[in-house]
Image 1 (tube, one colour):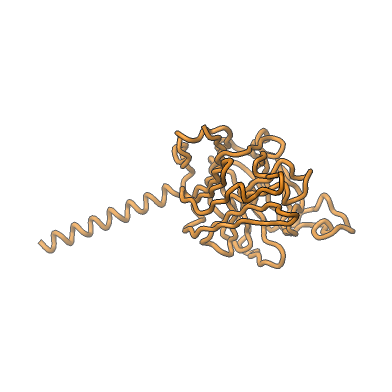
Image 2 (cartoon, helix red, strand yellow; image 1 turned 180 degrees about the vertical axis):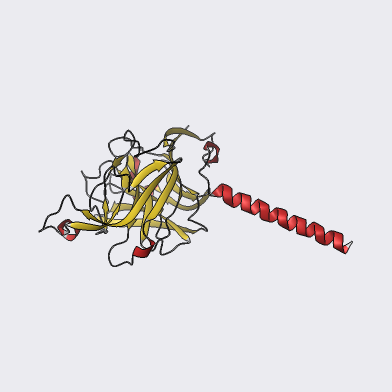
Length: 289
């Protein structure tokens, strides 16, 4: 009897290991269309890129930021360069690379990075600006994070008024922001202007195996913004909190940005870990039914 039970426990243990291995293998694969956590009864898909093609990102959906853009970050964002952004095997890969690259906007008298003739790093920042923007809805990403120290991928939005009004008056929603120096933490943040100054509302969640695929989402209604990781809501911001006198940048359309930055301002970058890849299975936008 003891021998029979032992054999049964061994068999059960082997079966459990097989199931765990299968689950892990499945988690590493790009998602099928049924993996979305957006309830069909509440949300209707209105825009997406499933990356079911090959080559550069779809120019009908994506434009690029180019050059040294913000925060004195060391990476140079390139335009339509396969080495930094390409689609293949059902995923978009944004790649940060350690390489010398000519600064097309070099100005010897320029401030910060504009006065740097060559970049030491390249990457890509994809944007829907001028092509698509939304006020309210569910914005969803399925992706896996780079893990090299100094990498800083993000899925976020800026108000359509960006470039016409100064930041943060245009509004910024960081749906998913990840610093590899804290490899078990995913963050979100809303940046806004209040009484003439910059304010922010920050959230974070502890998560495991961020180098594997996870789903990150924002559900944005006229009442509030809710932030999710794999269906778990971990951060809520009431829209009334973001009122700025008679204005609210979060009651107006925003466009999406999808980028892989490198940390500047004295933060350490592990050059030996480069290149690093931010791998995206899909980007989807839903409107409430």
